[in-house]
Length: 441
Image 1 (cartoon, rainbow, N blue to C red):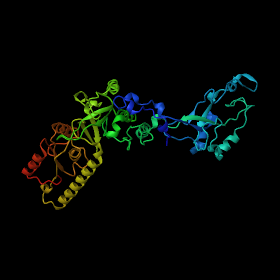
Image 2 (tube, rainbow, N blue to C red):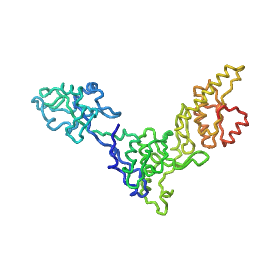
Image 3 (cartoon, helix red, strand yellow):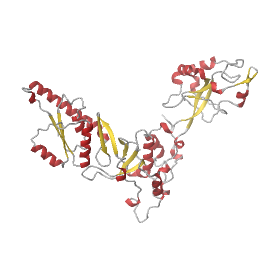
Image 4 (cartoon, rainbow, N blue to C red):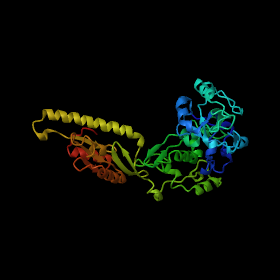
């Protein structure tokens, strides 16, 4: 695990009370160096040609952290002196020590140690395997083919200062714990304390969606940037819900916190501009928000995969919750298994081929098809052996449009998937009027 700097004594953020809008702009996000602290690690100076051999010999004693180097080139002024460079071998004035023939192999930090002690000593050097290596390395003052400086052993103890918490390896949670005050001792006077680190988020395609609590809103642009920087390979924009689901289509207003569609200069300008004192602190006029609007329509178009199916949707205009993926899969599996049992029973009891009845599903609020599409897709493994007919409805005309689009993408053919754009009550009456025997509503 990585060691983080204690922010209680070195908080990089100014008190909120000193900010015009009591909100941190994106430019307040500290540079990567502010997230890092360094530690002294034990090391061995070894011949470059024996690097692989010695690593294998020492095995778990070698520094092992994901995505981090364990072998380094030597540094002038740190690992060797001017004398080392200029001292000749065996009286040969033309032959000088060449540090490129040596490497520094970083070892596991066992401690205890004194980081301020230039003569770094770590318990790892007491291991019998390292002791054996050191004792077997003879003085090479008489050797002209040695890789080490004259008079020094081929293998020698050393040390190296390395970041204990490189920014590129920190998680969103670690970054936010560094930035946000989680106790009153860590917060500035009268600044809100963050009781729960807002490091979790929902992902829909290239969009990361958070639902920040009120106490986290002063830090919202910093939170957005942390999520974006730690997920750059898949996330293009971070959005925050700024209202409740109040309309009949189950959508909600959102604002952009980081990424595409956010004018950083404009955000900084607004955050630096004093709010009109006639407005209350919590009034809408005193807040800084970049709401999702018509100009962001292309940015909100996402494509994602769930249970082997492709889904396209407008994240701002339809209801989609990626956290329900498990529930979607559970219900689809349950319906398919139930349909398979009924189909098997019909096969055993059939008197004619037409006596095998299809499993009928009615989904009154189908959205863009997370249930209807995987149940009826011709690409699904159960399609030919387990006939399922789904009647899928949604009141939102945009959801209905994407339901039709996703049906085509996943080869959901008429006869297996029937789609409706009706009010839920009207849809249920429609099913009753058709006299359908619904197996799953």
